[in-house]
Image (cartoon, rainbow, N blue to C red; front, top):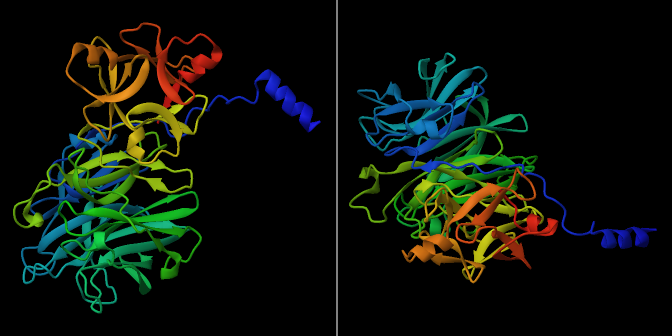
Length: 473
């Protein structure tokens, strides 16, 4: 019987690629940067429909907040100072890396600060806010977070895994020859840890020890039964980058053996996109709740005069996080300034995405590097209501047809190139929820895949139309 069913499937075409469902995580785009001169950014999406944004200001003297109903809206939202450094004593200098959280009906801001008598006596502190809107809340100081040692400590973040609230942070371990390692502990209340903190990572790898030996800025994201703790490494110049620790969500997170450390950075400078020193990230979610969003700072230039701490131009940026088939995050590269790129999955091969490989356009699964499958949808080079698809990792290179084959090539400024690289964005030929791209200069011809390579052809059959339909992710 099974043989007959299989034979019937072949004869009826049932065994051919099935129609893809609309992606669970459709495309979202933003325009970077979100905020100039705002480092160590933290964006929190609350149940009231607002995003709350705080970050380090270059004066290192206060804590600021913005709110908006969209992530992009934070770029133009008014900014309120909710707390200012003390004029003397502790909490009087180097106000760094604030994070805002809503816990048990109250607002909490975690931040680091030095003292007027010793600006490098950095410690972690907590503010508590009462009121529905933290921009107008009444704030009180809950004091310093006490840890194992009275040593340089900063970048506190808090999260809940399996109903347990944790604090993770960076601190100098007096027994180690480095700047800071990463620690975790359970919490008895929002400003107090319980038990003995556990060290879960120290800077030992080559990319963690450039300029300074640093692990700092932990940030947690959960997915598919695992927890991923990103952190920043090396000096805060172009060498700054993200590493990542992984653990099972059901493991004892206060057991160092529960964590596995990646051997390479997961996010680093990109000369191609002119983004340098990406780091001190946080995570939020898109407006529709269907995409995870990486929030981070970087600079638009590599060379810095003097101490990077005195350079004010770290700016807040965002981009979508993608998830690999194995359930791990793929952050790609820090994308170019301007509109963020998208990915395009095939209607009839849902695990395959448009990508370039040796500059030829094709569809492929498990694309690596991710940026080979990311394209910015920009105003068409030919204008007149068209769009062009610009490569994320080769800015200035576009999908264009040549002899009806689709390639990624550098814009040579000619009208012929502009025409070949411009398309009309149509509703999907096989599914109106998808997208099809019709050639600007060859009406009726669409980008489609054939034997996994991309062409511009005139679709006539149902299969053709499926081959010419994609979903933006």
